[in-house]
Amino acid sequence: MTRRPVTVVTGGSRGIGAATCRRLAVDGHDVVVGYVRDAGAAEAVADEVREAGGRCVTVAGDTAVEADVERLFDTAERRLGPVTGLVNNAGVTGPLGRLVDADSADLRRVLDVNLLGTLLCSRRAAQLMTARGSGVIVNVSSAAATLGSPGEYVHYAATKAAVDALTLGLARELGPEGVRVNAVAPGVVDTEMHAAMGAPDRAARAAPSIPLRRPGRAEEIAAAIAWLLSPDASYATGAVLRVSGGR
Image (cartoon, rainbow, N blue to C red; front, side):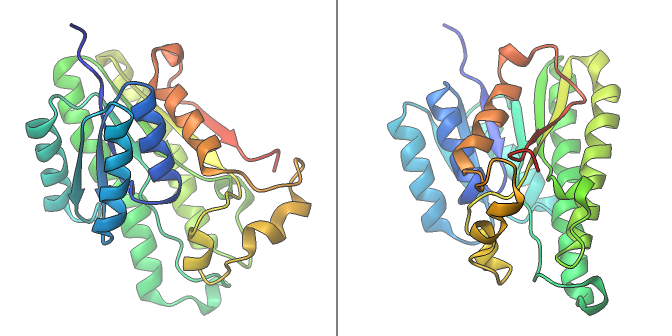
């Protein structure tokens, strides 16, 4: 019997992460839902994964904390089996605004989660995957990495540009050991993240500036992530796939 892939999704309790967990379950994955605070939301996603036929565990933890990352992967391996995939989706923006007005604590948190957390999770996944000679890492970047996001969150954009560089470098580093590394760069997507940054109507307001004239849906980003994890993308590594409605 063919073993089902086991994929860890950080920030899996909401938005793009939750949509990715649901899509992967339909595609035949067992899923680990990583989350920070909302256990109820994480368990609701886990229930949907199970209803779709996948096994699922939820693990609370902060990806910027090394011990939490170790526990996330240890739990995945113990409960579901060898980890074959990682989706580095956990991310924060901080409040919208100009850099000159940004609080230092917010800047540090954005760097810690978006960059350090991605590095820590990627390192742990790479340790496991290279030992087995296979695996796939998909980073969730952002169109902000190339747009710069002036007046909104240049610090967030900077971390996502770093994620793009990590994707390229790590793909070249791990390719000879059978591990693929890619990224998806969403544009404006209609999720609760906009409310968290203080602008709940931001996605709708952005629509006129998007060539397709609408924000994206979390399910559309999840589909791109699922493709990069799949055997159909077996020759894709080091790619940053922009899914931004043309923006």
